[in-house]
Image (cartoon, rainbow, N blue to C red; front, side, top):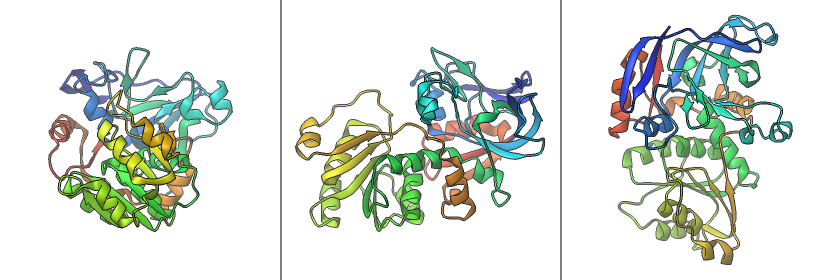
Length: 343
């Protein structure tokens, strides 16, 4: 099969490689669409340590089942599917509690780190265990279904806040995850959704996604602006989708006393934490990692157009041109948000 291979840091080759062979509990998928994730872009230069060459990256994908293993009896050739990017074991104590995103033996598609190497979906074919599969509704295109994974991350993050249908919220960061969070909040009827970023073009997309107010922190003091929009009290919940000291500090300062803060972004491995703000304001702070099997709910919301992946797709291109699109995303070309590659 043909695949886009990260052969060395910042170097791709589009070349022939061995076809994957499904194990007894796996299915073989013909990949129809795969999104370039920000984690892939950050990982291709070696800065994260989680994309060690050689590796076929890609974990936001959808396609058609071409063959099934002897024990993969739940699926048939021709089924339209997407899948969880986290391959969980299904046996550990976390999996048994339904916390599959915290699996002791979790492996992520398209990742090669110190512990494992798991080729991903920037290829013609991919084999995955049947337990991570989800059926794609006929109403959804493969390009839209390929973006289910970031939307499940967003839905899980909103649920982590522990507030049913929050009335006011702040979303820090208008990247892919931040914009998906804005859409999830809007789909739940949140009346005030304030989105903060430094990029005017992404804030314009945030408005289309359902943000009721946007703040460009390059041109405005964000805390003052947020307090002005919330009667001086702060929002009910803040969701941080960047992962830097400054943005986490902003998230904690933007909520009311007793408010909830969900930390989703993790660009930096360590940050300075404003402990006194968290303690004296008695904030509830939650980490949020991947999703917790929120795929069926998200697929239904997509099929009903309550979530709109089309608002986030900048381009659809052949997999053979993937190296060029990676470079353009790495260079932060204005206007580029999500690129879908099609083998």
